Image 1 (cartoon, rainbow, N blue to C red):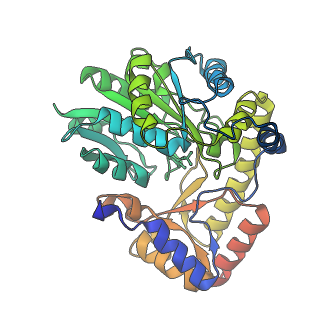
Image 2 (tube, rainbow, N blue to C red; image 1 turned 60 degrees about the horizontal axis):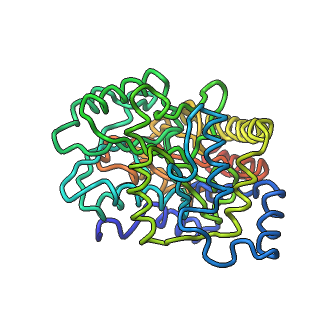
Length: 380
Ligand SMILES: *Cc1c(COP(=O)(O)O)cnc(C)c1O
């Protein structure tokens, strides 16, 4: 595991702390989620709901809420008894699925840049990671490279849409092409949909499991932390066909076993909030996205379209930097702002190259202060 010991997030957070920077590297909101969820978590603790080990696969009201949410938004039919497992965040769902499905030497195809937990989990399972780039000027999934990456040992395609760090939401056409490749090679798909609620404009999130022939080969992962702005509660879930979820449950049972009892009650309430709640959440984030994008453009960066997630990607070349890593190492002292270079999330430094990730899930006053600092640092 030595190669996974350090992370770009640790390096940049240390820099941020050393100079008192505004940390737009870290992807968590600085405003908590709905008060009704906090009240429910407190009530659950006081009433003694979930203070002792909750049921192994999650409390039934939460499993039912997850199933009805998938039905209501996407038309996916799930049996909460067998097709859902509650986990310690999306993270544990991902690790459990990879440990359950990947054997020594099996190949896992993953789009690069990736979320760093994927690569560590693939190593834990002794799998082999095969990276496929997000490519071109808009960093879309490279379908031809995916086709070329498939082989007899390919076990799993690991998808993430809305995609961290690029902010790309995979289109129906892209997902259809990926689905055809998965079916042709008879491999499984692990779909990390941690940002399923965080899509903007008309870039509506489509779960790949809704495409023909895909439900039976897909494990879908959700994150209560990301969906409800309570990242510290670490409630997540995996859903899918009974056999695949059964395999995930076995591993999960021997990792954390259970967690977050009272928070599970709160998440059950969150998932049945009306559509207007989610629309308002998206609207607020859209405004924060637009604020930060305009600020980044004002100092001369090229800003890519952000279709989903908490993150804007910019290209630093117009400011004369050789690459994103050099830029991110310089701006803490130059402007007292911190961001994350895509290179820290890639096998091939050329793929991350000039790109930098900025989190906009912050209060407007924080974003405005970061923008002023950047403008001063870059002489604007
Ligand atoms: C944050 C994140 C996760 C982990 O979610 P938790 O619920 O906090 O464990 C998984 N995948 C992606 C892409 C993320 O950004």
